[in-house]
Image (cartoon, rainbow, N blue to C red; front, side, top):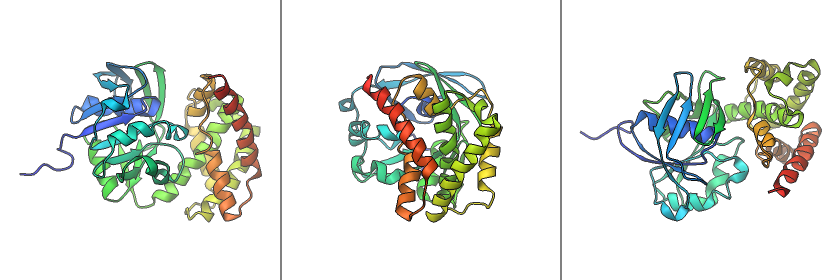
Length: 307
């Protein structure tokens, strides 16, 4: 009898072993159903994942040179969106037309971002909702902040991606309304990342009434752009986003906040930049988001200059 997609042992490469990639790689390795390879800058033999179900430590094969890899069944691209080009050598070696690439990055236009590097492989865009935090080399923490950890389109690619995570503690939702949900995630990021990075504060900063009011205005611009792009959003979408923001524990931080603390360039073009560029495409004004983009670029450029 032929194996189902959920039963086949597949070769899975995780490119980018930070907060998102570390959680994904450790979850798949802990389930033990597939052969997982981590594509990293530094060699790593073990990975510890702190998760609500309990802490696990897994052995992990890691490679540091793209010349060491061969094409695989799945690539999970978990770098920051602005690091996609630097991940290009990995993607070019790992991909062939039969490969599937799960783009687990922020923003929209996932397929267009990776197309130049994947040799005709098929793309599965993924919305990541779990909060990951890299605690130390080889140790990450996962926190849940939404009913589902990952969301993918309800198509053939999405279904085989969900099958890949069968047997793990990661929950995957198949959605017929992926565009709208992608924009909803971008709306969260439109305030969570820029505000926390610029103020150097965690989620607690959104409890301030003045910050809350500013976020509603930032969101009003972004929502107008999203609707122009075809997203089906609620009349009170901005208030819903802020309700979701306030439900996130005050001690958690955004990825951009952690990048600024670490002196890293910021993932701004796929978030605030995407809103501004999309606004230009549809003739929707975004003055507040444009102001945020200018300040974030200045911070990011200063960090890049120190490297």
